[in-house]
Amino acid sequence: MKRYTITEYTQDVFRKWLKEDGLYIDATVGNGHDTEFLCKGVESGKVIGFDVQQLAIDHTAKRLEKAGIRARCQLVLDGHEHLMKYVEPESVDGIMFNFGYLPGGDHQCATRKETSIKAIEEGLRALKPGGILSMCIYSGQDTGFEEKDGILEYLKEVDQKKFVIIKSEFYNRPNNPPVPVFVIKQ
Ligand SMILES: C[S@@+](CC[C@H](N)C(=O)[O-])C[C@H]1O[C@@H](n2cnc3c(N)ncnc32)[C@H](O)[C@@H]1O
Image (tube, rainbow, N blue to C red; front, top):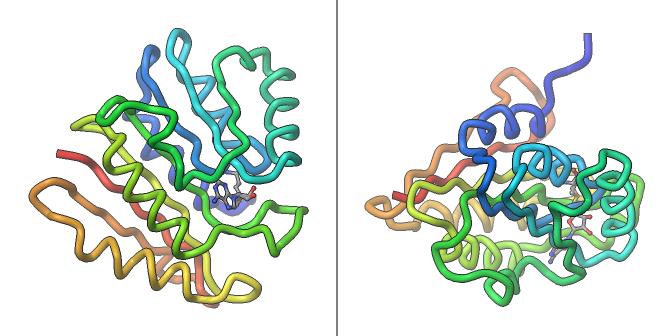
């Protein structure tokens, strides 16, 4: 049987927040799996997808074209740390982050602690009250621990009156399993 993955789990939780006419951000489009998931959920709404690699933007555009939902997505070749350049404060229903490197791509072109934390900060400003921000956080091997530790340390200090933060765990999986985290704006 195929193993249940962090991206499936994240999408399963996120699905409850998908509204046909909503505005969503995929902050790390990569090969476009999450972008496709979001676009399928918004018939009259919109998805904005960010990546710093042209290759990722091209792969995602192709995937969306094939699925017949390319028109629902604005793909942006820019870092997610600049996302507030593209949206108004408190205008976004949901944001997905899948940190790390492009599978099958350049491992050096991975997300980094400083820009990831800046992007989460911008994401929290962009979210509507009631909106959700999801994260898949990786560590170990090529990725190291700096980004994961930095993000988790940052999240611990986020105002609990304004945001609920839930961190899940692949409890019986050894060797630094990925960490799913959800932030809900009050
Ligand atoms: C794990 S992959 C994303 C996988 C993707 N969600 C999917 O479904 O295929 C991480 C992506 O983050 C991108 N990335 C790295 N730094 C970034 C940044 N500052 N802003 C936006 N994307 C970035 C990488 O180029 C890579 O494509």
